[in-house]
Amino acid sequence: MSESTSASAAAPKAGERPELKRVMGPGLLLLFVVGDILGTGVYALTGKVAGEVGGAVWLPFLCAFIVALLTATSYLELVTKYPRAGGAAVYTHKAFGIHFLTFLLTFAVMCSGLTSASSASKAFAANFFSAADIDPERGSLLMITALSFMALIALVNLRGVGESVKANVVLTCVELSGLLIVIAIGVWAIGSGDGDTSRLTEFNTPSGESAFGSVTAATALAFFAMVGFEDSVNMAEETKDPVRIFPKIMLIGLCTTGVIYVLVAISAVTLVSPEDLNQGSTPLLKVVSAGAPGFPLEVFAWITMFAVANSALINMLMASRLLYGMSHEQVLPGPLGRVLQKRRTPWVAILFTTLLAFFLIGYADLAALGGTTALLLLCVFAIVNVAVLVLRRDRMEHKHFRAPTALPVLGAVLCVYLASPLSGRASADYKIAGWLMLIGVGLWALTWLLNKYVFNRHAEFDPSHIDPSGPVN
Image 1 (cartoon, one colour):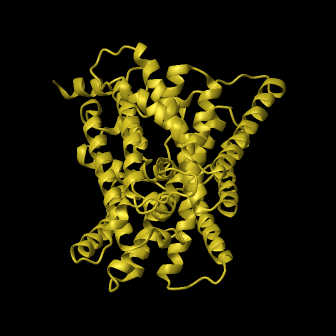
Image 2: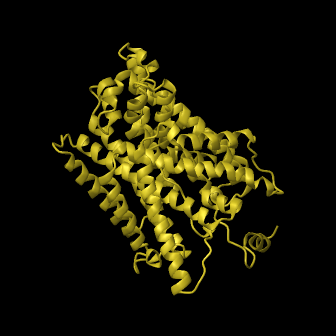
Image 3: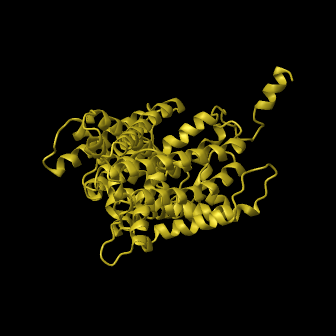
């Protein structure tokens, strides 16, 4: 084939959407999946999960992994069926075509990014004082540090940040190194007879509550640690042969992180009692201190800070970008779409999301923020599991992954259960999520009224015009 023929074949035809450059092979995609899942959840919330369930802290992480795996099969069918950049909002819009439902789902994804970033800010503050070997006498110092960190994230966001796959590789290696350190310390301690493995079968069952109730309540929180795998579908258009490699790589990535989380949980509870793990926001620092007293704790604290800082930055970037996109689609007020003239960053959306994050940091504790993130995404995942069944009516000529029908059905049922009060979920999760969604609906209603009665226009929300990435863990 001649060069001119090749060039013409590669060029998009008139009216067609130009394709992104396919640069990601299996190795880079695997690092992307693993890097998105690793982060704040396991670094900051292992102790809170232990407080819910007791010594069997590994079991909620295992259950959360199973629910995530079921939902991942739905995402795999959709991303191989529609191998373009997209996400839950795009799939929901294809399946149901209800603009308000698509808006609610997209805004829920945005809010989950805010709660995830806010929890990362609190974890950053706690680890900052540990790294600096400073004991804050009052909780207000932690609050001021967390708010200052979020303000710094806003400044970086305003300046503009170009994320790259190479940067993700570096950050993933840093995050992974910290967890491997915890696992290695746990293996060494258990092998030396220093760990208390009898705790692994102990359950924290308050009066009137069963072991099953404790596990489900802890799983509802631990699910926060498993989110992030859904982000990889937005890389479909930049992946080489996504239909072939996506299923294998996503499943390998999920299984890898699931094994790491279970091993970290086992190491943690064999070295530190569940009661001690539940105190404070630096549970893995306590594990390192107990299992390897000679290990420089400030090094591990900086690793943790680096991991959660990356989570906060990416989530705030995502949240402001989603608001900007929805404003551009005329389903949110127009000012949210304003950009700085020189930097070309959505400054109003950044300020708005930062103010919401300030409120969340001041209003909610770490467990409530993580629980709210999990709640919002469980609702999103339940809809995606239903959407994949609805879209079975849409036949494709090319081969694609097809999940056994039982998996998305079971995934939807489990997601709904874990999102419901039946799972023992804290009431604070519903309050925070409710207020956030109420703000979104209020903004949507205001925009609808202005479009209809002031500007005399009608807008249809097309989520394919924005990039609905989910929170990074």
